[in-house]
Amino acid sequence: MAAAARPGPEELALLEKLLGLPKGNKYGVQGERKVPVLQTNNGPGLTGLITIAAHLVKQAKKDQLLGSTAEEKAVVQQWLEYRVTQVDGCSSKEDTRIILKNLNIHLEDKVYLAGNIFTLADVLMYYGLHHVMLWICQKKCILCGVQNALVYEM
Image (tube, rainbow, N blue to C red; front, side, top):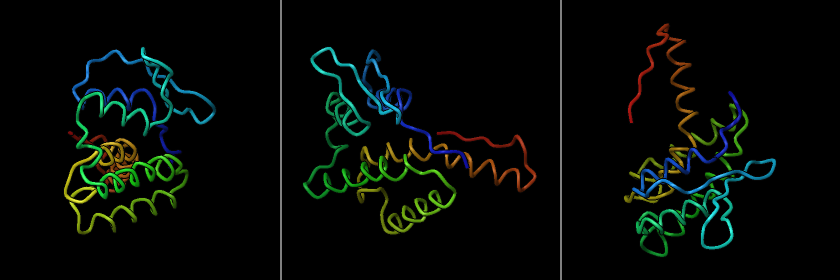
């Protein structure tokens, strides 16, 4: 499997759209690891996927996506960190298998990553794993002899 997709301007633009924010933010990347950067009009640029995503959520006045209680906020933060440290760092089939297994175990008795509420962690985990799920579906289609039949909608 190819190396994990790195978060970048496209992912942040999708989040911006999901949150109903107007276009116009200027995103870039910096360094060898291509860390996302947001150039702001009101001060220094913001660096890092989690920092920029939380900023966008607050800008959209959708703070509930960060959790309501102290415990929910901590769980959301935990999964955002998991996304950046584990999912974005995934580089092998074994890494991918472990990540998907961990998520399946965690979600056995939950609707969303933070329990029963939809949060930023769910959005960013989806964005981070989307390419993995497409790859798995494409491989299954090829193994089943169904080529060019992969259709998905979100």
